[in-house]
Image (cartoon, rainbow, N blue to C red):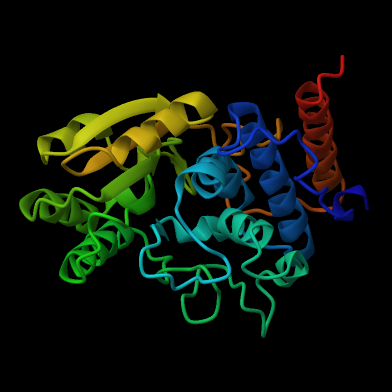
Length: 303
C-alpha cells in the first residue's frame, strides 16, 4: 500500500542558519502530516482530522518557537507544551520523533498494547510529554499550575508554557476557570492556542455547543488575544513569538480547517475519529507526497 512507505527525511532543505524559514516550516508541517497518515493507517484507529488541523501550529512550535532539548527532556529551563486536545496525540508524537525524543519507527506502535504511544499522551511513558491529557477542558488549568510552579522555582522569566486547546475544550467550564486563574495570579508566561476548527463528533460547534467569540471571551478574562489563520505560517509564528514578550496571559485564536492537507477530509464532520483505511489512506498519502515534492522543489529553487 502506497501510504505505508517510509516518511521522507525532512532535513534535505537548504540551511538558512538559525531559525527555519516560513517555507521550511510549511514543509516540516507536511512531513508531520504524512507521519500521522501512516501511523493511523497502521493503527486503524485514532483522530487523523484533528491531528492534521494542528500540524502547522505544532510545526511552528517544535521547529522554531519552543526552547527544548531532546537529549535532556527534563531540562528545567525548557518551554513546556501541553496538548489539551489529547486526542490529537499523533501530531505531537510525529514532532517528538522527528526531533529525536524516540526513534521514528516507534510511531508504528501507535495505540498498540505495550507501546508507549497510546491514543492520548502519557507523561509517564513517553519522553517529551509534559502532562497526561485527553479529558477535554483540563489542559489550560494544568498549564496555569505549571506556570505557578515555575514561579516558585524562579524559572518564570525563562520557561514559557504553550497550551493547545480545541473548541471542545472551550465547551468545558474548567477551561474558563483556568483563564480566570491566569489573569488573577498575573501569569505572563502562558500562551493558549485555540484550534478553532468549528467541528466535533456530532456536528459543528455552533450546533452542539456554540463557543461564540472566543477572542472576546479571553479578552474579557484579562488576556491579550489575537485571531489568526490557523494555516498561515507567517501569522502563526508571528503570534507565537509575540506572545512570549507580553506581560500578561496570551491567547491565540487560530482558525484552521479540520483535516487540512487531505482534500476529502477538509472541513467535514464525517471523518472525525476515523482513520484512513486502504484506498483512502493511499489517496491521503499521495496528496501529501505531491505537496512535499512541490515544497522541496521550491526550496531548492527548481522550477
